[in-house]
Length: 169
Image 1 (tube, helix red, strand yellow):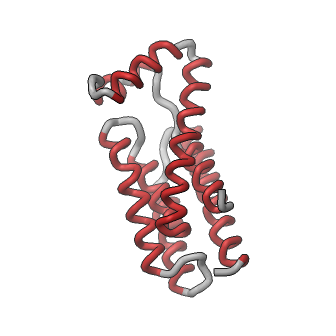
Image 2 (tube, helix red, strand yellow; image 1 turned 90 degrees about the vertical axis):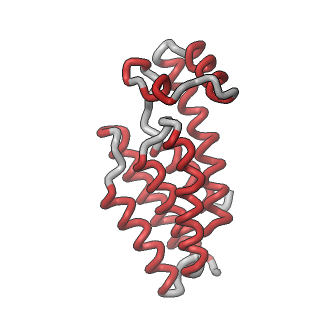
């Protein structure tokens, strides 16, 4: 594909995930209408031949985005809207860049989590819970407990990861 195809994907990914991040910060939800529209636009752009990927790669990117985010959702670390948001971005990025977007999302999410933990005065507890989760000793209810003070909007991390991937980073 050429530069205009890359620009189309970049603009849609940046605007779509950026809007999702703003909404998530305010409401702790990513609206289905946003993720469904974004995924549909990705497939339509691919079908029209003006996207950075073809229809098969757009569908594969969408599925891969969901598959990569699903374990975090099952563990209670992310919401269903986060799963759908990376899937929607994947429809514009294709599988290779969707994987990059996921890696960028994980890194951005980790940095945001540390900043939130420091701000909330719970860095030590967060690091201990993360260690327990990594070795399989943390239960999902511990992560999901609203009283724990460890939840934060994850769409901003997805916006960062997906936009960086769309930029080719």
